[in-house]
Amino acid sequence: MHSPIKLLSIAQQGFADMLPALRQAFNNRRDDDRLPLLFGHYPRSTVLGLTILGVLLGPLASMVSPNHWVHDHVNWSAVIISITFALYFRRYLFRSGKAEADDFTWLAASLIPAATLLVMISVVGQVSSGDVELVQGGPFWTGIGAVLVVSAKAIAVATALTVSVAALCFTRNWPKALLDLALMLFVLEMIMAFMLFMMLEIGITDRILSAILEGVFGIRFADWVGDFADQLSYSGFVLAIYLGIIGATWTACRESFGELLKTGHVDVLKTIKRMIDPPKPKKEKKPKEPKKRAREDG
Image (cartoon, rainbow, N blue to C red; front, top):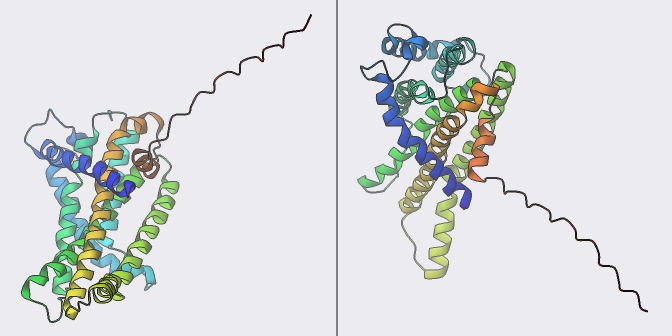
């Protein structure tokens, strides 16, 4: 229980930074950021253009990509935007020679509009394609469960974008970054697919709740109550994990940004783990006292 709570606490620090960072990056002042060094003379227009271009090219990439099982689990717009922004960030971080330790906030904030737009598009896409599953037989207010499930699936896109850009930018070793990123996203996708299967397909929350209430208290609720509980438990768990990853990644990257500029490599995942569970200081071993010689008799 300690680790999830600590993760959300670290994430809260990251989310508290985001709005001020967004204002810093996209206000009319140019003395509090150096976006022109990153995106040229018209940074806001460039950020908007790169985002829209990625959104438009995503469906085209999806159509020409091989029909593989991975295909259904990839948001190609997020992939294109991740790689595009990572190229801009890497050029500034590792080639310009102008990056400084206090650049992180406005640098990371330039990615927020793209993440927000991808989430909105995901929500619209799920609604228009009929992926919103309302609780059968339940009152109208149970629709909040479906809204939360749709929101959780949409936030997954922003999470993948955040993790991708962090993994691709926080090391000079490009091939290793791609390998680590692929492994990280695969593990995250498998965990979330398992939770989707357990909580919505099998309805584990419904089964446990029904068994306890009926077996202990003799209470039997309508079927829609269990379905609604499944939606709430799934969306609550997924939103907590996804938002925790986004906020904790921001915090970890901010804290280790100076180290990145010095060494050229930071393991973001290990940094988050270290923030959640700091290593305990090693106890210094006391020097052994020499044994007292026994007094000789006589």
